[in-house]
Amino acid sequence: MSENNSVIEHEEKKYYPYTSEFSNEDGEVRHTFHFRRPQRSHLVQIAKAGQAKTYDMTGEVLAQLVLPSETAKLRQTIEEWPALVPAYADEIFKHCGMGSVFAGK
Figure 1 (cartoon, rainbow, N blue to C red):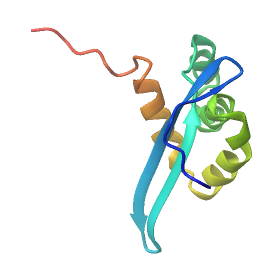
Figure 2 (figure 1 turned 60 degrees about the vertical axis):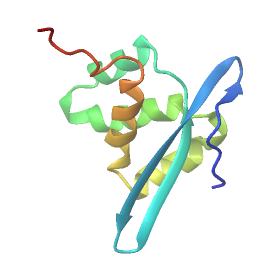
Figure 3 (figure 1 turned 180 degrees about the vertical axis):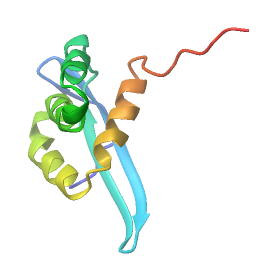
Figure 4 (figure 1 turned 90 degrees about the horizontal axis):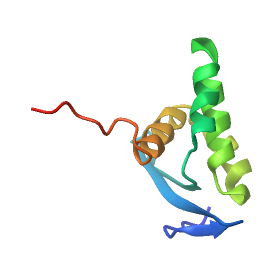
């Protein structure tokens, strides 16, 4: 996949680049996908999935948020590298406010 680290506009939505980098026995692995900002409905889908299906639903929500031309590649990549589901979700949801609240002093 050619890497494009710029914001992409598609159907009046902005898709931002998120890159996962890690090393394994084969060397350096790097994946970049463009995701739009999650809406409340995406969070509700994950919450309603129940604990047993949270992982699968999170993968489905990522597929809804990714740039449409990258959907098939994302599905293939998370099938091969399942730990990318929570990694991408964590970073994407941080950018819409999740995990950014701290107790005051």
